[in-house]
Image 1 (cartoon, rainbow, N blue to C red):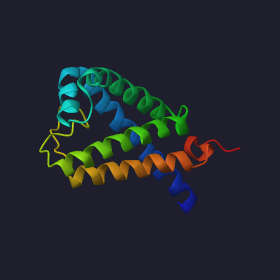
Image 2: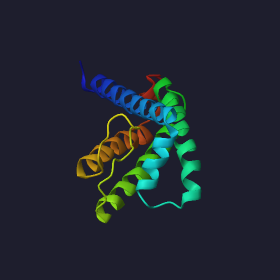
Image 3: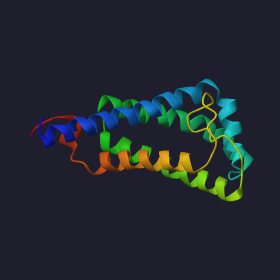
Image 4: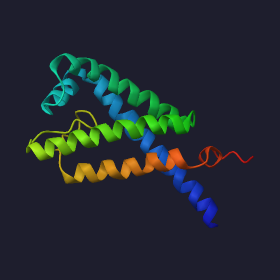
Length: 147
């Protein structure tokens, strides 16, 4: 296998991985909006009247963007949406760590109970990198369409 094909397959696998992470975490949050709202509240960043709105909107954005990314529809645009969400999530986690909060991140819904910390920040940076490469990579590489 030549290097170009390896690059194509690696990008495809990483794009699918990122899409599935967002679809699965979004669906888990949708299944328990109350627990996700509690997770948002635990960060002590947003005013109470914004939390419920965010708890409803964010999971649907994750599922829709992840679904489009998985299907190869508007890859760059959905990668930018996911990149933006990951940036916000990472900043929130950093703030929680700096405040010394010992809370579950709520990142992948309620099933895993991951705590905020350096490991979660590293995971988010890895995912940010994938989203960034999907944004800067030419569209025909991401969709396997040769022009």
